[in-house]
Length: 112
Image 1 (spheres, rainbow, N blue to C red):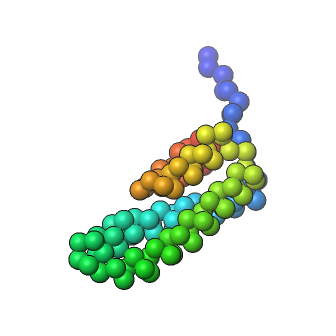
Image 2: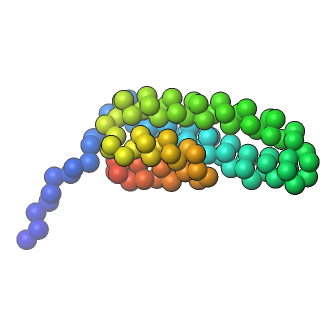
Image 3: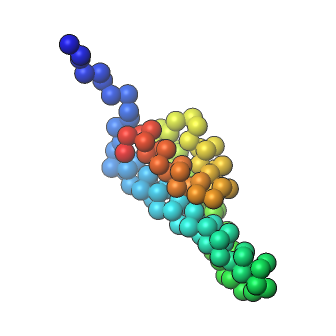
């Protein structure tokens, strides 16, 4: 007969779950702003000669990027993330769809 194995996934406290939710929200905001910048603002600037969109979306994306990195570091200190998580979160922020994929993999690893 099979016996139940003890779970190796960490149990998160309410504060840690809240920190993880903040990281998810910031990741989605940063990832969306990056996709808007790459998919709408940059083509408007370089294909249609309309640089205005970049001048609006670019600074917003920059602020969201810095906020995401700060929230990632704070969350990593509050939650015992796997060793791969912090570098993967930073690397993911430089790739289109990266924050979304990182969020999925991190939650899968943490069992959330």
